[in-house]
Structure formats: structure tokens, C-alpha cells
Length: 353
Image (cartoon, rainbow, N blue to C red; front, top):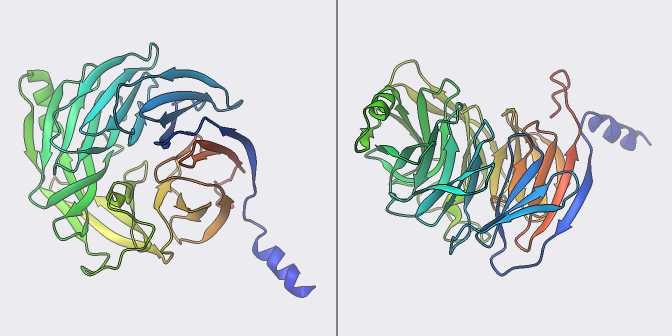
């Protein structure tokens, strides 16, 4: 019919996906809390019951299990770009792990409240953490030495941290005291000097910040959000030029980090009006987002918000990860059922992944 023909044409350029592999681990009361691929994409690091499982991304076989000693769930995992180190955060601390031996090389324990995010610099020499203690902190990756405490008069909760591609600045995404979404920026030349000098960590107060009030003060929160939803609602794109914020809708924001220390702006880019999303995660090329809700992960265009590919897949909060090449997506529900999905290769000409 003509209607079916037009529908087929409308979806002609929408990619397809097939479930490559489904793996169910033994169910646990605390479940899977975070996922991350290794730098080469061969393994998936799975945080379950406060421990780490290394899963072969091709076969689904568990190749190694590491006891971290955490009493709580692991809230975030970061893998160093050079593939030599892994960072985990749980409760008020972070831990650094040698990928060759899987031994803990340092415990980062200076934060004064729960730590929710962690990131490596492009050269793998620095680790940044963000906390609900109103600070971001910088550490030397080689030995966990605390280097810098990053503060702002308006910064209340740090939900995401990201180094700019130049490596000279650190961005923190979070909320100010009025619940507005904000980006705070610190430049790092002073940090490098402090690193060479040694001694106590220096404190830097941001000179540049930008906030947007995306939701009213009397916001009626959706039923699926609980008291800990803040930790999952803000995510930077890998290039540091975009920020996703998810509470009542998904907002994709443009982040402009200016030429001077005092330049930083945050502008609305696109809004996706779906109140059922948990969180929104960028693909490795920063061009697409994976919006997570119950039983579905929607792949959308980051510039327009257009729905490109709905994936039937259970996912709990941050238990989602893209392989470094963007061609594989892993997700897990709370009980430990993993679904690896192979995404069609896209080309810049047809805007595919």
C-alpha cells in the first residue's frame, strides 16, 4: 500500500541492530551498577556487588573477577586512554587499578562526601573526581597523589567531570544551590606547576562558570526518579563540547570553553520531551546519544533529538557502555542480565553511527 511504502522510505536510513549475545550472571541483591569497555574494546568491565568482573566482549565469558573491598556498589568506572589503568569510585573514595596485575595501586580518600564521577586526562597522567562535597579534585594517576582541590562559590553537586581535548582545562557538570544545571571550568597551568613542586594540594577557585535553569523550582519529579537520581542526570560528551541533563526531559546543551580563563558558556541545543528517561549518554564520536528508560534504549541524534534506533534492552541507570569504536553497545539490568548489541556502521555521509 502507499502508506506502508511511505513508512518504509521514512525509515530507510535508520540503522538496524541485532542482539549479539545475552549473558546472565548469578542474581545478587545489589546488582550491576556500572559498565565500561577497556581501551582496546576487547573486554567489558562490570561492577557487580562492589566487585569487578572482566567479560570477554566477543564470547561473554567471565575471564577475571576482582574483589575491590568496597562495601557499597561501584558508582562509576573510567579506563585510562592508554589502557594501563582503571579507576573506580564508591562511597567517599576512588581506587586506581593496574590493568596488567589488577592490583589496587592507590586509594583516593580526601573527599568529604559521596564520589559519583571519575575521568582521565587524554595523556592518562591525571585523574579527576567529582563529589557531592561541592568539589572536584585532581590526582596524579601514577601514584594517587592529591594535586588540586577545585571549588566554586555556586557549585553544590558534581555529577560529571571531563578534560577538554586540549588537556588544559577541566570541566565539571552539576547543580548549583538553586538546582540550576551548571558547568564550571578550571585551567590547569597552575596544577602542572604544583605537580612539579610537590607538597600539599593547591586549591583553585573557578573563574568561569555558566548555569541554566532548565526546570522550575517547584518541579514535580517523575515517579521513576528516587532520592539518588542526581548522580545519573548529567553527562559530558567525550569531546567536552556537549552536556546532557535529564530530569523531566532530556536536554542536550552546547558547552563553549572560551580562549581565556574567564570564558565559559552553556546554551540550550535540543530538548527531548520524554519524562520516562533515566539518563542520556553520548556515543564515542559525541554525535549521538543513548537515552535510557525502562526496557528501551533510544539512540538519538544529538543535534536534532531525532529518534534513530529504539533498542529493546533493560538498563539500570549507568549500566550502559559503548565500545571505543562505537560499534557495540552493552547494557545490563539490575539483576545482571547483559545484552551486547552490534550497531550498524555508519558513515558521515548518511549520519550513521
